[in-house]
Amino acid sequence: MRFVVFRSGGKIDTDLAGGTRDEYVIDMHGRLLDGPWAGSAPGAQSLNLIDMLVEDWNSHGRDVTRPGFQAIAVHRFGTWRMGIGPRVLRAPLSVLYRYLFRRVRNIYGIELPYTARVGRRVVIEHQSGIVIHGHTEIGDDCVIRQNVTLGNRRLDRPFDAPRLGNRVVVGAGAKVLGAVRIGDGAQIGANAVVCDDIPAEAVAVGIPARVTRVGGARITAS
Image (cartoon, rainbow, N blue to C red; front, top):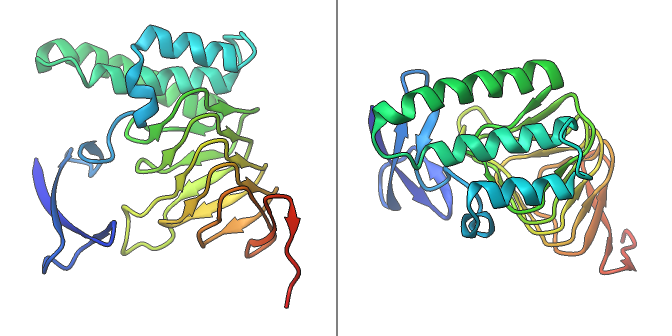
């Protein structure tokens, strides 16, 4: 099943007047199968599946038993199998992917759909309570710790999701909600709730999150 939506200002808009036309492929359960957000981040697209898995293995301390590595590996596999052209050949791979995805989600508590765009050398530290929206974009060399949510903020804008730059560190228990952008090298403190854009090289803490440092310089409240 296919449907067409329009984007205005980089966000999904249910108002069909104006905007840029994009086509998304949705299954019968409303899950995104293909579209502008589906697949790996641009940096990861330059590598084949084996090279990406080796790189991810190195990033996770060369330990295949780490839940974070397994979650990333399943994500890479899920993205790769969508490149298999004939559906009849892809079908058994899709069955395997769904089994592996549910296993990682239910056993380790890491929900990372293949439609999320994940860059290179992304590390998921520890496990449990990690939920990543299917339209999230994660840049290269990011670190995501336990109990992190990268998700949408409003039910009427279900496709809104965070976009993380490169080298972003998301602390334990942090929530990044809505179509916000986190700049390169930013650090999100533990248990912070981020609902606004965070500049590059910034440190954001608190509920709601506020920027306390940018590029090493302390920001004082006025």
